[in-house]
Length: 232
Image (tube, rainbow, N blue to C red; front, side):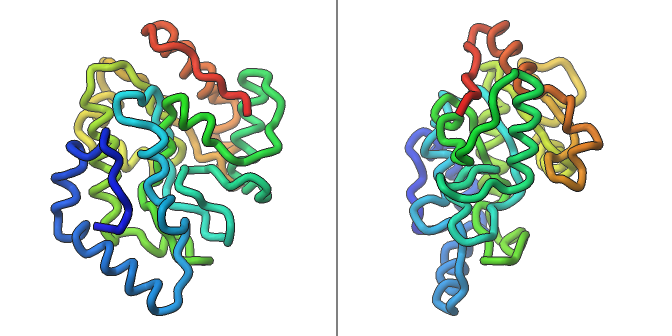
């Protein structure tokens, strides 16, 4: 696949996906892109940060993104998150607005969501790399099978977990994962919180007022898994 090291807790779950032809080609393709002088984000060593920071057996909530931010110094391996000191992207600004409205928490100055990841919030993009300045440029190159397998590994557990789906892309990903698709339409051990995407283009179409954070904490507390401290 890639030169990245698969975290131990995820290895068994991801092995079948890593053996697929597309996944096998992915590492070589990424190397060729970089050898051709193309900047690829996030940098090597951080592309599996979501899995490294949130072991499979500790996942309490999954937030699905599409692909990494494509600006220099932004992406660091966690969906919707940017490195400390980086200007907050519009979608993250709207996430913070909803967090304030939902839980009364002040809007954070930092865009680094690592504290959420360390509490069991899996911040996973569908595609884990992108070419600088080219949103969606690495879609269909082999990441889908790997990230689908990661989400499936969480959904197939009996452990009650929250899946936050923002926008049509996240919902489509959920629909192709049997255990999660079941949770979308039937009684399940899990909670699915779906709404519009926090992008400025769609946030007013159902993201604002969706209260994903309080819903998540209420569900987790009701199932003995403890509330997440969303304050940054």
